[in-house]
Each structure stands twice: as structure tokens, then as C-alpha cells.
Length: 135
Image 1: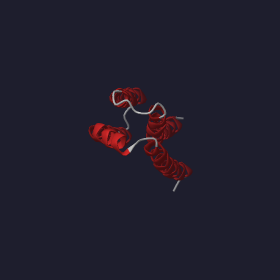
Image 2 (image 1 turned 135 degrees about the horizontal axis):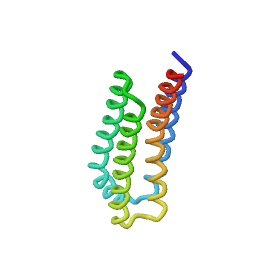
Image 3 (image 1 turned 180 degrees about the vertical axis):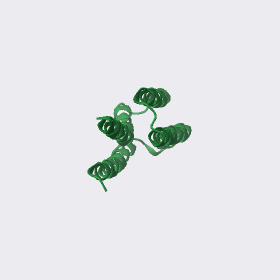
Image 4 (image 1 turned 90 degrees about the vertical axis):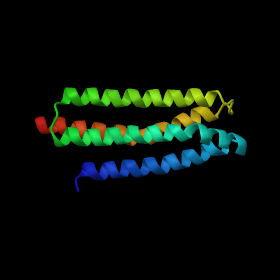
């Protein structure tokens, strides 16, 4: 296995552990009633987040299997990033409507960034690999 593969596996593992720890800290900020409200609010968000991650993973795989040019890949990445940002902002808007503790929203945002960071790293490493193969 290449150093890039080992690095990616390490990034995903560290991100999952850090995300689980952050999720635990986030949940401790809420009362049981508030936790139920958040769970109900996030149920559909998690489904859309899963489809967004599948879109990115399958799309990137197809792009690199069929050697699509870098400008098309960049457009694809920007579309996926835009959809992810829109999804996150709509969830934050719904959570703010629940009148949760003030510390919850920033902690929740950090947890979501930890969840998305391995995908960003994967995209950057794949783009690095493509550019390196052109040189």
C-alpha cells in the first residue's frame, strides 16, 4: 500500500474517533427533551448527508476511473461542496429555531466539520495524484 493510502486510512480513522468524541461532548450539553428534539430534527438531515457523501464517493470514483479532465472534476467538487454547505446551513437554521443552549450550535458545527474533513482530504489527495501523474 502506498504512503498516500496509509495516510488516508489514518485521516479517516482519526476523524471518526474525533467525531465520536465531539458528538459525546455535544450531547452532554442538552437535556433529554432537547436531545429528542434534536434527534427528530436531524433525522432527515442525516439521510440527505448520506446521499451527499455517496454522490461524492461514487462521482469521484467514476471521474478517476474514466480519467475526466481536471476542470470538470473541479466543477463536480464545487457542486458537492455547495450542496454540503447548503445542507449544513439549513440544519443550523432548524436547530436555532429549537432554542437550544448557546454552546450547542458551535460545538455541533465543529463536529460536522470533523465529519466532512476526511472527504476534503480525500479529494485533495486524489487531485494531487492526478496532477502529479500529468507531470
